[in-house]
Length: 281
Image 1 (cartoon, rainbow, N blue to C red):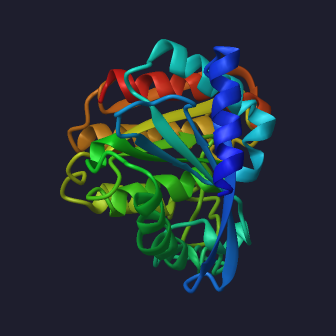
Image 2 (tube, one colour):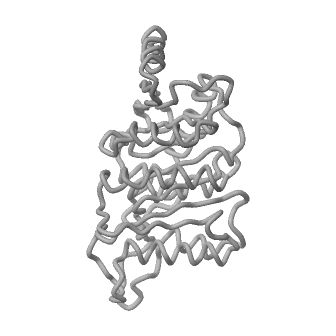
């Protein structure tokens, strides 16, 4: 970060009297992913003496299309006592890095999901904690993602509730399966559903916010009149409720009428996720 540039941005924000987030970028050479990861940082222009909450977003390259700065400005005006740092991680090979750690799908996609998890836990977090004063509690930290990134966000938080407690799953690719589709058992072999069902209980502190759009897709593999994106989400939530999770404090769902599988739809509901994240801390 260029410190004089940061000071100019901060001074400008104060003079304008608004709550537009300050933005900067950094690049991290990951030994786990064997590539440079471009990181976009957004934080409130004024947070005197207040440690920051942390939200890590997969597919950070899509945040501008979501008009994320306007959403954060509205959030700061509504929740000035709960400032947070948003970290957007620009994607590499999504089909390899996003997925379920240690459990590639039947085509071996997601084979780098564990390496991605190691990057977030072992390389990204220490770098952020060195630069910013962050709240240390897992309950003050979240990971969100979109489509495959949403699948990954759920898995990463589920496996690391000592570091993050909240997952935001926007149009999650919850169809991710360990075996090819079978017409005689169309809902079988979905990886997240399988391991949640097999778990004795949900991890301590785990909370999740889901959304799906009625126009996310047209597929209806089990012919029940509900598109798969919504069907998969509702079924996973049912399994989580069986593990004792309570609505709305630990488990929430937003269905967007006319919502499409695109950043513009996700941007319109990001504020809903942020509000829930604060109100049910």
